[in-house]
Image (cartoon, helix red, strand yellow):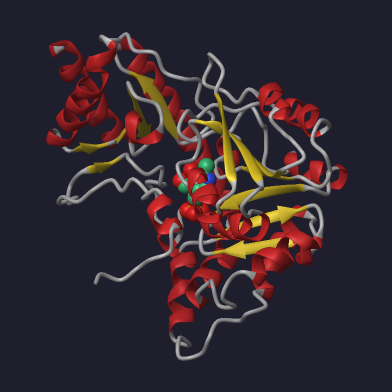
Length: 368
Ligand SMILES: Cc1ncc(COP(=O)(O)O)c(C=O)c1O
């Protein structure tokens, strides 16, 4: 007899992994990582922490909590930490959801969101994006019922890269009952010209105690491999609940040390943000020159529509372009795996990688 697993194991979708082949020398434009490695002082801090790796990490996470509290003016008790923001997201699902409860989010959005309902037995309500690939916040608000426990708003949205201005989010929050937790997933907020700066949404926490801002060190801070995320919440209750459902030592000493040090190098982060935004703009122009539609991007990636084909040919056409790019040394994400068939999601890489992508795409689009 095979091992009998819990029913939810059949329901939980697998995360679409890019890879499975030799990645050496490839332009890795599939996972929205930073092309820049950590600043030398950040790497050194992580290495120093390794020398004490015989001890468990500091379970109070005081230096990191303190660094974030100083930067954002949010009390440390309202700051949740996690092994990537994904860790906090999944813990929030566990803490808030159960059979009979509902969660609402736009779709397509971050590919991990469907996991929350599948793991908890709650019902997911997926609200289609509008014609500009943005969240339709009015419609999301109308889907909130007495059963709703959680609303997820991805701003800027992955995979479409679009963002809504904070005023729109604020108007939306006014329609959501205060017992419903609203997670504003801001993994890419530092790169958004629509949002302005990563401090603006923090102001909303004063007015909306049910609001949680989910943030990541994986993007502009360049620490995806160390897995550090954080959440700034309107009250202590969110942090207490997500800590209750996890093991005490979810963040390694090296990850904590690197994140604390990374917070001290905002000039470097700012330089990277400026470089990424400039490269994004060049990449958008290049894609448009090929005659393709690309969403207005507020993140470190683009959402590109492939030339339209008959409905029954979309999947094959998209797969052919993704495979053609891979054959030319460029790894991107197929839209079909992210809820948006007929699209590519392309991370902004180094100038050389971006050029390589554009040259390869030009060959493939011409041939079709
Ligand atoms: C919108 C969004 N939220 C959260 C995450 C998770 O990031 P991490 O767990 O690396 O912090 C990602 C990663 O790509 C993302 O795109």
